[in-house]
Structures are given as C-alpha cells and as structure tokens.
Image (tube, rainbow, N blue to C red; front, side, top):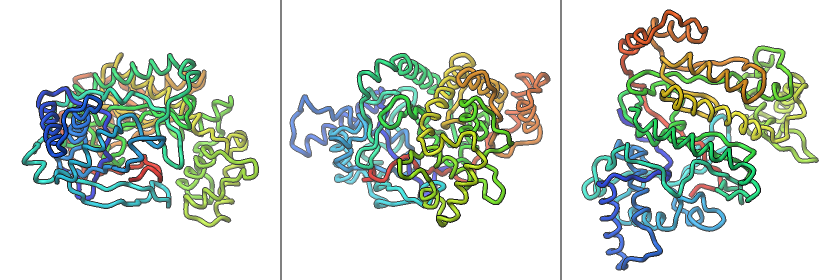
Length: 472
C-alpha cells in the first residue's frame, strides 16, 4: 500500500547513513556537482555530508514509495539569525538546488496554506517535490541504505531549544547558565533517546503491510521560548500520520494501541495546586461543544495575557471561528467551572506543564526499552505499544505520574485502536481493569497470530509543526 497522491512528508535532515552503497552514491553526486560547477575540491565545504543527509532523508521519508516531500529552499532558513537548525547548512541548500535544477527532483505543488488542525488559521507549507524518472534511472530506484546503518546526523542533537524570531521558530543556543543548570537533564535526554534509537532500529515497524523506516520513530526533545524550563516535549516524524492511520501501526507484526492520559493538563494543573477537579470531565460544560471547550481551555492555559488584556476571548473567537460574544461566554463558563485554577489562565502555564509531562514521557519510554525491552512510540503525552504490553504501559504511566507530579494518582487513561476481534478486545479490556492473571504469554501469541496484519483504508499524514514565517 502506498500513500495517496496528495500525501507529503516535510523533509528533515536529522540522519545520515553508514551504508557503503549510499556513501558511494553521495560521493558520485559530489563529483557530478563539482564537474557541473567546474569546481575543484574545497576543504571548507562538506558536500559529501550534505548529499548523504539528502539521500538518507529520501530513504526515510518514503520518496521511493511515491510520497512527495516538502522541501524549503529559502536562503534565510540556511544561514543567519533565522537559520532553522544546525542541519540546514549552505552546502545542503546548494546540493538541493542543484538536484532540482538538474531534473532529479520535480515540483508537484507550489507553496500552499492549509488550515491548521482544529483552527481556522492557516500555515505555510513550502513547495513539494517528487523523484523524477532521471533520479530513478541515474541515482536509484529503491532505498540505498540498510535501515540499521542509519544513525543520527552529528549536526542534529537529541534536543533543541527554539525561540520565535520575527515570527519564525528557530533553534537557539541556551545561555551558559541554563546549560549548567540543566546539565544532568540534557545528559539524561541524550542517553535515553540514543538508547531508544538503538533499540527501535531492530524492530520491524509498519503501517499495515507497508514498512516504515525506524528513523521515522526517532525523537527529538524540543524546548520553547529559548528556555530549557518550557516545553521539552518529544517529537518524531511518525506522529504526523493521522490518528486513524496510526491505529494500524505494527511492531514486528503485532497490532498496537495508543494510550493517553485523560484531560492530562487540566488534571495536572489541579494536582500541582494540591487540588482535585471535582467533576468527571474538565472539558464538559452544559451548552457548549466539548471540543470547543477543550480548544478554548488550552488557549487560555497557553496564552500569556498582557497587563491591559487578560481576556483570551479574541483568540478563542479567531481559533474557533465564532463571534466574540460566543467566545466571551465560553471563556466565562470555563473561568467559572475552573475557579480554583483561574489564576493559571493567560499566564503561559501550558509550556511549563509540557515541561512536566515531557519528563513523564521520557521516563516511560526509557523504562520501556531498557527495563521492559519492548517497542514503544511516544506521541507527546500518549504512547503506542503492542497490545500484549497494554497492562505494563498503563502501570508505568501511573507510576511515573505519581513519581514526577507527587504523591497523587492520575485521574484516568483512554485507549485508541483499530477494531479488533472480540477475544483480543476482551484481553485488552482486562488489561485496563488489571485483571490479567489468566492471560499468559502463549495466550497473547495465539491472539496476535489470529489477528494478523490489517491495512488501513489509506495512509495519510498531516504536517502541523511549522510556523507562518518558516514557509519557503
């Protein structure tokens, strides 16, 4: 199964390959590039690394399976104050432009402005390209690298600190003081995510019967506002697959499910205040759509109000595409329901909570692959695991919530999965009820074997992680 014609991945250059075949091809492209430019070797330019990163990314992001790739070529992203990150080198930009000019990459769409998820706002996406017949005949018609020989690009660490400059999110270097204060945390992050990569590269990962490169699961921890105290969530390419597509993720042909904390941030902020939300669902308010309440709540939690404007009604109106009167009514209803934590709204508390939930996520992932030695994928504050690991994951999520947040218990979890057979569904439900004494390893073997591998109706991805000024 391949992607639909409209599907594209946003190319990233976080990996390179040690595969001799790919290295040789990268060198041959360097020779062609220099010949076409009538250039001699220059010691201060590393085109071998640039072409290696490009060829590796072509493998990772499924260009040989028909996916198109969003490829920005805006000079500002590759140098200066708006440089996106350390992998965006001028050598790489020159190599990309040469591949396009020589007809190896063909533009299939121009700059687009799709709507952001759950918002009427639009984002910029750069031009999309596909491999041409010339690429397939002269460079390769199939992936060049053994996935096990793909490793982290030395220019790309396992964490990044970002800041908005002129509307663009760019990587910045934290101050020496920040680095000193957070030395242990950053070292733990590097160690955990490197161990994760080494473990997951040996797991056969697929969506239905369609294999995906393990590097798509590789994660980076992103801090926000130039501060190592804000954000810190884990990001990977696999999270850009739509949620219904992720239901068909398989680890070594074992079906998976995605488990997440229920209304995570509302309960988390109550617990930080030493309180409990008295109701069942923090997002349910009579007279309002639950999805609207959730969006508005998170806007109010993430927004930093100015001294003269403490109301988020204008932002709520814009995001939900409702009039200001409706937005104001919704804001007031949330303030009334959540009066005990009202002081946290419009304070930018959301990024501080992300820092906390990212500590939980990193701990769960690290424990899973080092102690339990089983595959897992993190999607912000949710986790995807094999169905046989459901109870283990639930218990770990509860344990690390209590360890990191304090002596409190998580309020609830929920699971999302494709439609399974009745016996497998019953076994999963028993995991949620922690009533698994009669389910043995051989029982899981039989349930998994009988279930087989199912393909999704389609494989689709949505890119959501670029800001308006990052586009081209």
